[in-house]
Image (tube, rainbow, N blue to C red; front, side):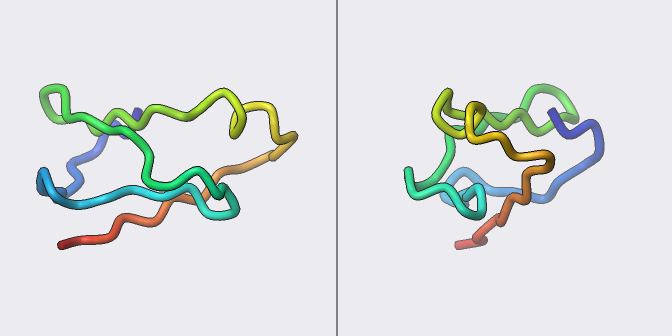
Length: 56
C-alpha cells in the first residue's frame, strides 16, 4: 500500500521490475494505492521491489 497520492488512471498499468507475469492488479482505496503482489513474486527472495507505472 502506498499511503501518498499517486496520480494514476484506470487504464494505467503497474509492473514489478524483474517479474515476467505481466501487469499487476491494483486499486485505489481512499487516498492510497493498493498493489497486489502475486505469490510467485513474493517468494522470489528479493529484498526490495521496484514498480513501474505506465501511464496511458
